[in-house]
Length: 334
Image 1 (tube, one colour):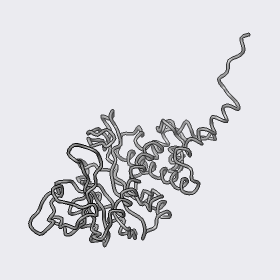
Image 2 (tube, rainbow, N blue to C red; image 1 turned 90 degrees about the vertical axis):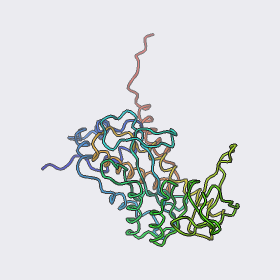
Image 3 (tube, rainbow, N blue to C red; image 1 turned 60 degrees about the vertical axis):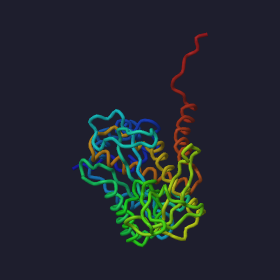
Image 4 (cartoon, rainbow, N blue to C red; image 1 turned 60 degrees about the horizontal axis):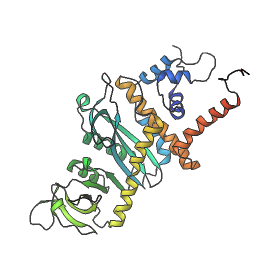
């Protein structure tokens, strides 16, 4: 059997350098001109070679995390696929970008941060019609894997979607602390006289310790986000009963890093632009896109160069070379 003509690193570096088109055909066109360069079929076979194992991401990411410091943040994002009709893993999901339900792929990521670095450590794709697993199932699986890998984070952060009793109890069973948002209809018992929706409980600016139905005591905070007639608010909860509002606000700011990560992954690594249909190829593309992001992020941390500038510098060098030796010229007519 002949050895493969391209490998993971060939595709990863193509994702880093490419600007708009992220197809196997384009990857072949951009390959260095040498004896017997890879054709687009070689890159197609690369994506189909074997089921992706997220352990490959962890093998590269573990050198850049501190297991006993920082935060673990879990959230999902929808990879837009509005025109996909025969593509695996595509279904309808809520999109925060569009503020409505759209067709796409639900990518879940477990991200480590200490406030500066944004290191993806694990990921899953929500595809309940095929594998029968809910987002909460994937959440607990990734937390269990993080525990096995030796993580002892200061806090685990997640959105209200993942604040189920099972998830909160799983975090506590690992000996970890959490900070999460709660929906306004979650029942709490503030004074031992019965359960009320948290939205109906008086919560001072410094927070209040209440009993969360089915879980135990938590400290809740009420944070106003928008100026609206009905006084729209967000509710946050933590099992760290001594947390201050200043600490909660600091953790929230650090937690926003996963949204920054989502934007960089989409804009700089072509994560939602692969033109493949089969689940195995899609999953492998996602894995390689996350590994591409990790390289851009490490470069940012070491050199202080943003992901966008790092990509622009690649194109800038190509433009400089072309300007020195332009091809498309007109002969003078005068």
